[in-house]
Image 1: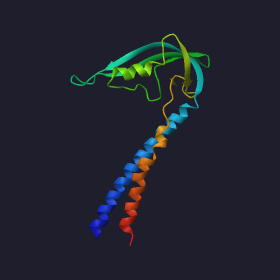
Image 2: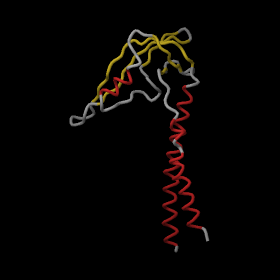
Image 3: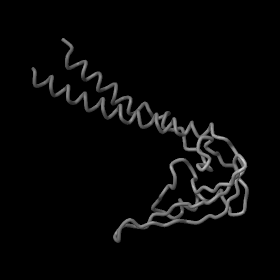
Length: 156
């Protein structure tokens, strides 16, 4: 009986930890996406666009990302940024995905960027998705399931 209780306690702790960790990560991602939506909006000029490549190892395929350099003026000062979104470059195995990410931006055109008012050197061209909060139910199942297993292990 005691071995069974210990086993279910360990299982429940693992489930609670895994569910809790991923719930925390999703809430953090959502908060980051929401934070940029409160940043100051300002016009930006696309200065350069390019497909960037990286190869981590000799036997590893090449990764591709959309590289965009843009300039903007904030509080009377001029800045440049290379951030498409808060997360930085999104690397992909297919060159086509990088080209699709860059399709909205052409050198010499004006667009809108969002500037972090506390750190004006940080600006983005796209907001991150808020989808993390919409899918938080999945790790919540592990969290609640772990609590249920723990309750069942000590219920008389």
